[in-house]
Length: 384
Image 1 (tube, one colour):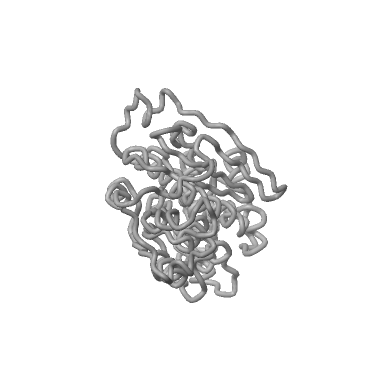
Image 2 (cartoon, rainbow, N blue to C red):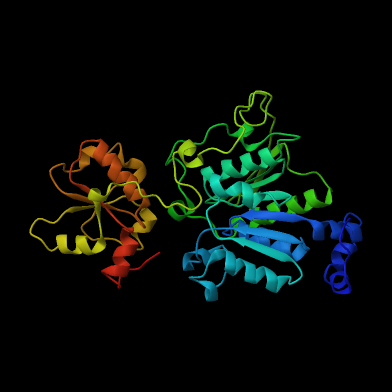
């Protein structure tokens, strides 16, 4: 039985009630619905806010991070006053301020195979607002195994994707993307950048799809993949079909339980930060500061992108972008000690391992990157 609406709710949702496709019964469906939003960042912000505003009765928020000032360019559910606070707590407070009559549950721990089943179980559908491939495959798999829709969205620089995956009646994510891309071929937003309004566009469309699914109206994105480019405002639709050999949702399925998604994708997932370098090949900013004062200082290797160098740089550093490093190893002096750095230490950790595998012996990753140097050694240097 659907829950009744009170007088305050009739007033709050009056514009919905005027729509024949929604009406009182539709609003009661929204009140009865439960949606788990996996991620409270760029995509999760508009998704959660519009679901709350629409009157979805129970919203779950999963994240394992704190609000950072760099988030505020796109993660509109957070604010300056919540920098340093848990993202799930920041988002919950904003949603309840927007609509105090809903229930908001928070899960401040990793959404990984060991925790995902229990978290997802009470919800009607999941919205994939994540930013990495292990989490995308996990959201898809748990939806398929639990018989729920997966409202999918992803963003990269100026481009976005949108679809609805439901293995019960159509393709799942694995039908379309049976294998993850090779590690390091798709950089994160923190490395590649993203137009601030882009996740607002895609996230709002994800919320639209979730609401349509709850109401049972319109034509959803199931069986279609939308490709959006903000630079030329182009939208393309690709028709998707169920893979008769899908390892998850076909008659030949070999996946019957959740797996190790970080191992499957070869990259860290939702709650992990890359830490790929052995301890004996890491160097802290304080250690580097001392080494640079010696008679034979190490060579500094900057593997960032050109636009990053304009924000902050070491004057004497040698510059080779990460994407070009493998083909330009002959430009480096193998006899010298080399300290590799990027913005926060993730790309440079991969670069360090690349050099070590190529036979370089005295190579070190600057832990925390040039931002950590600015914080701990040179406060006059800009962080970004």
